[in-house]
Image 1 (cartoon, rainbow, N blue to C red):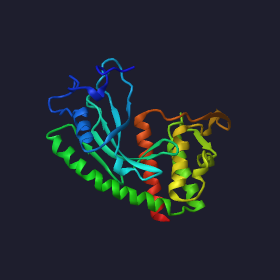
Image 2: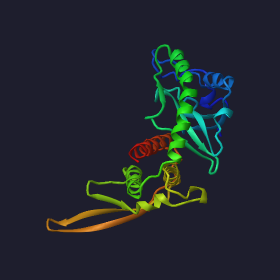
Image 3: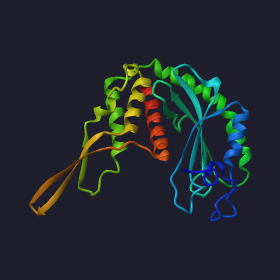
Image 4: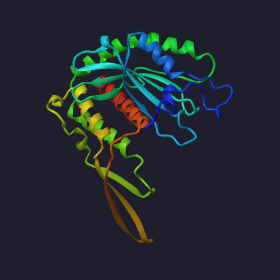
Length: 266
């Protein structure tokens, strides 16, 4: 378990292996600024790290605001930072569904502020914070539109095929491998509240199934025995739950952006 000494959220200086040009961004200072503005911490996530990077690794804080609670969902602010030169400081908007305690992320196509650890970063952080409330209300309107727009069965199939391809893209070990699965698994309902064909409900069902794993798939490899003869070997497996905060964030953004594309096409 991390204590405050090794928790990167409370680290007060950059890693000594970063360059002189690297500007330290104090996570607790930005968080304190948000709390003064009425935000509260919903949850946190910290990436794994080796002994050398412990206390400086990537970390994520999810903030909630009482004025951005809209009944069955709330709009959150997500802050991502690190102190070892492995990534930029990021701010994005998230969506929290109370029915399943599920945290979504609005896509890059909607809002993401990326601030490089160089130069005068405070002005950029202040500018990003000024945009948050406006963008949050715009996101609310977008979600309402998603809740009131149906997605066709054909586009649902396209949606799950795109997501399955993203989930399985790293499962191929050789150029002769072919991966396949029954993509309809991604439309499996987990609760009655998700019954329906709106963009919002279909997106939430796909997103939750994708992150919880258990998508059954098979990889077929063609092995050449001779120039004229080959055999197929089949490996069957299933995807694991996505636990990495980084991968969760990436997949959430990917799926939200795709949902918005299908919303525009409806």
